[in-house]
Amino acid sequence: MIEQLIAISIYFLQDKEIIKEILDFQKNENENIDSIMRSEKFACKEGCYYCCIGWDVKGTIPEMMLVVNSLNRLNDDEKFEIAKRLEKFKQIKNFDDVPCPLLDNGNCIVYESRPFICRTFSSYDENLCKNKISFEFPEVVQKAVEYSKESIDKLDDFFKPLFNTKIRLSDILFNKEKRLFYINIADTALIYLNDGNVEVLKGEYAKKYLK
Ligand code: SF4
Image (tube, rainbow, N blue to C red; front, side):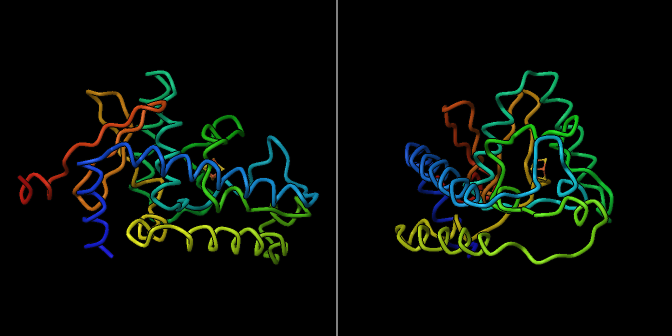
């Protein structure tokens, strides 16, 4: 997988426009997953955040690109605050009772861009979440999983590893000079997304081995 991610990263270094297409695809995916989930009536509501505690959320690379894009819409003070929280979060070994660093006053600051796992985490009974009682996920979640798999299956094989590789929130990086969040793919491409603008810089591997 790493070789494939390096190959994709090299592609990105030569053609960053393709990243915008990938982001549009992912945005569309997110909207479709939301409409699948809306077919059920859940206990989930604004301000309820039991499922935002106790884990380092994972998402695919395109999902995390959208998260980065949303984070870069924050003002500078907010960005530095989140960067500080992410830095602390990276040191944590046991996530029990630790809130997600993107949770602010009970709300997700990247709600529109939240990854699949957050988008589909759903419950008919808030008390089960509150009391950490394990429960079976509603059937509609499986529908969303299948929908997502089918959409990715239709993509060009070359780009599939992007959608099949998960990274964690704590893998998101912050460049203090640029005041921007970014992700590092395979040490080859550093991807900065800032409200529709895309910048791709060489990572250490690319600097060493690519001309
Ligand atoms: S990314 Fe947002 S929705 Fe997901 S756990 Fe963090 S705060 Fe909650």
